[in-house]
Structures are given as C-alpha cells and as structure tokens.
Image (tube, rainbow, N blue to C red; front, top):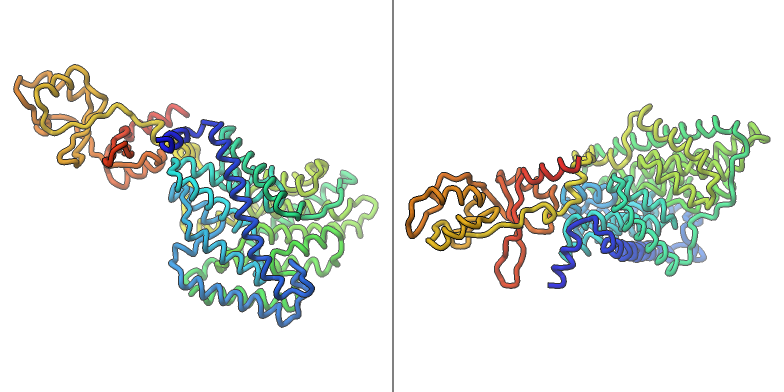
Length: 571
C-alpha cells in the first residue's frame, strides 16, 4: 500500500518536492554509472600504454596504433553480429527514439551492450567520445529504476532528463550545461517544473563525480578575453567555418548511414581499418582526443598539424559513428572545433598581432561553435564554454560564433543536427509540438473519470432502483469476469425509468450507446492512451490497477473526448 501511495504521488509531474528528491537520486545514479564506465575503458589501457600513460595514443608504436583499432573493431563486430538487431541500438539516438516510441522505457539489454561495447571501443582507440554512451547509461539506469518501482511513465521522462543532465555534468564538470543539454536536446522543452529536478540531478552528479574522481576540471584553461572589437569579424568567420566543417561531418555521417544493410562485421571492420590507417601517421585521431585538445589550448600544436587533425578526426569519427560503432560524437567535435579555433587564433596572431586575443579564446569559441552546430544546441554550448573557462567574459564573442555556426550548418548547407540526421535515416518520427509533449508528461490518472462501477448484463429489482436513483458516471458491463462494453450512467438511468416494472432487466436488449473498451495500466501517459485508442480501434479505456485482493480493480475510465478536453483546456 505504501508503494502504491508513492506511485500516486508521481502521477502529477507538478508535484515538485517528490520530483526534487527523485532528481537528486537520479543524478547520483548517473554519476556512479559514468564513473564505472570510465574506469572500465581506462583500466585496460594501462596494459598497453608505455609508463602507464592514459589517453595518449601518440606514445604507442605505429604497428600497435594500426593493430589496436582494427582488432578491436573486428571483435566488436563479431560480438554485435550475435545480438538481436533491436539490442544493437545505443547512444543518444536510442534515448531520443525510445522517449517517444516506447514512452521512455529504455531496455536494460541495450544499456549493457552500450556499457561493454562502448568501453571496449574507446579502450581500443576508436575515434569517438564517452558522452553519447554516458547519456545512454545515465538515462537507462534511471528509466529502469522508475520501471522497477512501478512509477508512472511520465516519471520516466523526467528521470531520463535527470540522467542525461547528470551524465553530461559528471563527464565535463559542467552542471549548468548538463541541465540545458537535457532540456534542449533530449526532452526539447523548457518548464519550471521540469527544470527543478534536472538542476538537482546535475548538482548531485557533479558532487558525486568530484568526491570519487580526482580529475577536477576536464581541461586546464587559462584566462581568456576579447582584446578588441575588431576581432568580431574574424570570430564570425570562425563560426561560419565551424558550421561548414560540421556540415561536412554530418554529410559524411549520412553517407555512412547508407551502408546500414551491410553485415555489421564488415562495417565495424572498415571503420577500424580506416582509423588504424590514419593513426599510423596521425595518432591524435585515436580515442576521445582530449589530450590533443589540451595541447591545442596550451598552444603546443603547429598550424599545419592542427589542420591535419581536423580533417582526420572528422573523417574517422563520422565513418565510425555512421558505420555503427557504439561511441559518441560530442567529444570528437569538441576536438575538431578546438583545433579549428587554435588554427584560426594562430593565423590571427600572425596577421594582426596587435589586435588578436590569446589563441585559447579561439579554441574555446571553436569548441562551443562545433558543439552547437553538431547538436543544434546553441544555449548548452554557450554555457559549456562559460563553465570550461570559468569566465563570463567569453560569452559575448562565443554567442556570435555559436549562432553563426548553427545557422551555417542549418540554413546554408541545409543539414540537420547529427542525431536528427540519424533518426530521419531510421525513419523515426520525433514529434516536438506542445500537444505531444503535454500528452507525454501527463499520467492517465490525472484525467480519468473515477466514478465507474461494474454491473452484470441482467439487473435485479433492487439494482434497478439503485441505478435509477443514484447513477454512477459510467457502468462497465461484465459477464463471467469479461468486460463487454461501457455505458453512461445517466443514459442508463433514463432508459430504466421508461422500462415497465419487473423483477429483472436485460441491459443488452436496451437501445443504449455502447462504448467499446480495453484495459490500460495506471502508469501509462495520455500519449500511450491515445495510441491505444487508435491501435485497438476502441472508444474508451479502463484504467486497471491491482486491489488488495488477487483480482484487478477498475480505477477509472478515459475516452478520446476527455483527452481532447484536457489539452484544449491547456491551449
């Protein structure tokens, strides 16, 4: 009974205090699973890295830089070929798809595949990031927590947002950017009610990450600020070039998606072979590339090498992600954008030494511009730059480059964001209109009509008097425990008043409006209710829960008209 009361608290997503507690728990869970994931893919590196160095594939001999990603990709391909196709879906794309097509439930099997496959891919030097796997794992552990507790499906959406924010916050030490990323990319809505638990999740995840990890800030970034307003045209150009490069990344990603029908062992093998061949001469292409980004921030990479890294990292990551490797693309695009910013900053200092800011400013702006363009998340990118630099002075120039990059990618080159590109290729429709979002976040028990009683098809005299004098809103006719149809209580009472007296009345012989009906679980959302009405071609739904005994009890009735009235009252 206490668990049922707990579940009922979460029926209404506007119950802020319970959801705030839920946010704290969700953020901590996301941080713990991310830390475990990072440990798993960094621990094996100690076996093949000289002097125990980590995240530095440049120290490996050329033969191992080739062998490691090729062998790793083939092993992954062999393992994935043994899986069911549905279990191969991982990453942010999987989270976005399940948010709408399966009402927020993320299968545990896919999360296990993501954990093992993603860790193995990153440990063997595949060109990708940890953030996509981290978002999937953080969202999945919280989705399954809600599922195990039997919480309403609208709670799963909030928990997924909390898990996403917690994962990004813990991965980058950027709690505010994590919150905006979750709202801007995953749930695509901004509400005060939705923000509160997500903010607490980001705070909780950052706290856990700082307690159990000594990494602190992911990048050591010296202070940076704009020297002269004459730099703004150059910064605008940086945004345009970043948008063009990201558009090229997404175009190549789209081309690779076209090979989806090719056997997965072949696809993974080609991706690993490509990374291995490039890594022989450009080892910076391997792994997440954060060591390369740190060198770019410190100004330790020559201009020519920066340009080579941009091209190689773009090709290797777009092909690896497009061919299906279980890795992310946020980190590599930060590297691409950071190297672009470093290159343009170095060029600016050569051309206009008296006007140009420190190259680190351009690195930061390039990172934000690439992140915004590839994710279509400009606000999250702006806040990420601020939190990376721990300085508000970078906001002004960053905003210009980030918007320029996003517009260049979308309006000039007509490319969608990376994740939308994948979803469109897979023919997954993700509605973002306000009505769909409202239906997804509303539990059926907040709208259902609770005044419903069950009656047999044949009424006796005393039952006739009760129904005639005190009718319920709805009556469900049942025969031998099987639901027949619904009738409205007022209509039944009016008909009984016209029936000639007698001991019994057969309701099936009365000329009444009958509502076809099927059952629906009380944790469902209005979106699920509407989908069930269409799929089952019925006119009403019985919300069926478990009572104190072994038999289910009817908690209420919901119709298409009641759903229409609900969302029309909101808009």
